[in-house]
Length: 230
Length: 230
Image (tube, rainbow over the protein chains, first blue to last red):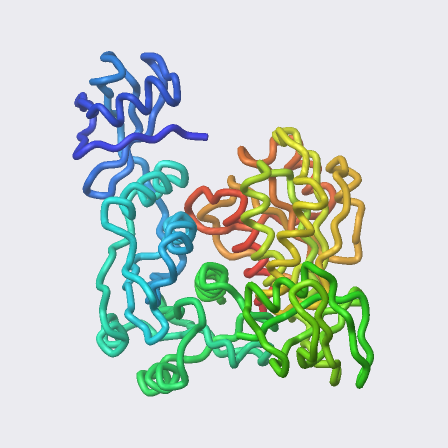
């Protein structure tokens, strides 16, 4: 498994100084010594090959080599997420990062009982997932928005929503296009009025099998279904 | 959301006595009173409509009405799971139940560092997921088996495996058939030798996008991909 660190920027052949968090991670958590190969993720969302080259657990230096090309996911996916409870949201975030979801829009739904997790917490979880999965550019986060406003964002992407009443239904038409939006409700799902609003906004109800999925499973399974549709 | 309880058996028009766990769940956790509608899951994997009809938090009685038809998942899926660490496994189990996976085979891989979670713990998590998602028949659990023995089970189903070296690769051929097996390695993935053994056993390497997925994400996303392939 590759070891990855974060820095503001990098350029080929130049050294980069890591901050204390990153130096500590490489030296203490991963126990790397000088000469170890590392991948560097920059604030611009680039991935670079590098070598640990001096310093200590408070301030380490990397020798940067060359940019590493990273393939994009097969489709651009935007997740409109109806504010599940924060624990469920934080458990879901790594999968969202790993799948390559481009943006998450927090949506205030009728059955939402909470706010999104705080920005700092979200960023910590997202960074840990980026480190693990090698995705250099984090998802964008928008909102929280009212459902109507959320449905009016990225209308260039065809919309789908996880709708429990569709469970067990036969096959759905899937996006042939380069991208898709998926709207997933909070615990308890969408109200009838919300399902109508989604349908009016030309979102297609998506069947995710015969059973009632939790929000996190519905999001991951729905995203996978849209990502890998032929 | 439907409230669900477990009992050994049920028959139409007859009363059923619930044990203390189930009586406590309906009366104390869900705070139901006599007359409340309940769905009953039996040991035979059937789902019945019923009404709470007397008793208390230690011994409640249900009046059973009629069997509820439950659609089967679109495909029969068997997951060969390379013993991730127990916390990751227990987090993954509800999604496996919700997706309708028919059987889980625990597989001892070169990089497996652990045993499967204990049977009682697995059953508790599976039951909670069945209660929540409405799936009346739990998955079967087999093993732990050596990889070679695991690959020799259910050879009637076409095999796939999540193989990190395939990440970012173009589209894979997917099962047109009525079922599929998915093999997912432990943290750290399969060794080269294991990947060869999988290939020799006619398992197809499956790409799950450009990034490195954790075991739990790889399992759910791979299962979703196979379940919903056209």
